[in-house]
Length: 197
Ligand SMILES: Nc1ncnc2c1ncn2[C@@H]1O[C@H](COP(=O)(O)OP(=O)(O)OP(=O)(O)O)[C@@H](O)[C@H]1O
Ligand SMILES: [Mg+2]
Image (cartoon, rainbow, N blue to C red):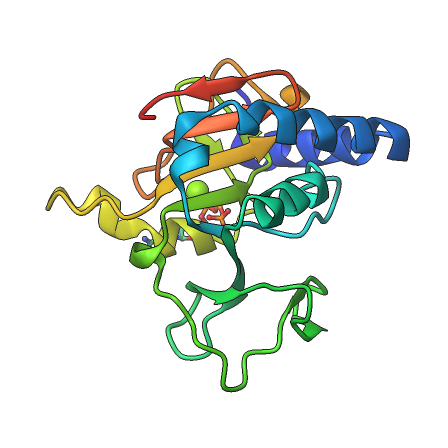
């Protein structure tokens, strides 16, 4: 098994090497695969992300969610609680700005934010995954900290956590740490890996 740093570098390079055409196709297939899931159909409040660094394109999925009347949210860096995410509504009219990672996020001022526990479904980006729900992110620990309550054993589950990825981001074994929050499912351009859905 490779160490986290090497694996992260390799998998990021792999997804960035995809052509724009491959990215477009992957994004469309991803939306189609999710559209078939009952848990996706039932979710009303859905957090998603805007693609960056070769992450699978969520734009067809965003269009699908809007067509289905779901309320969408994007993660924003929490202004007070260090290294945690908040979720703020994302409509076609939402004003956006670049955050410290040069990723577009909604302008927060005066916006209602939704705590992570109050969402139905969170669609997360990832760098590598295993079919049993293991997830490796970009290394900031943001999603892990935000959903750390799931590991506490007090039964609080919150939203379903579903990783979105290119099929080529799958590995047989992931170096998982005690703080890594497992996923309920992973959806790729090829299929859906259901663990807890
Ligand atoms: N619940 C937590 N409380 C405190 N620190 C944490 C927690 N979860 C993760 N961290 C810290 O965050 C750092 C990065 O974690 P990790 O390498 O798992 O990031 P990641 O899962 O790739 O990132 P992300 O969750 O943002 O996608 C680690 O050094 C770890 O100590
Ligand atoms: Mg982690």
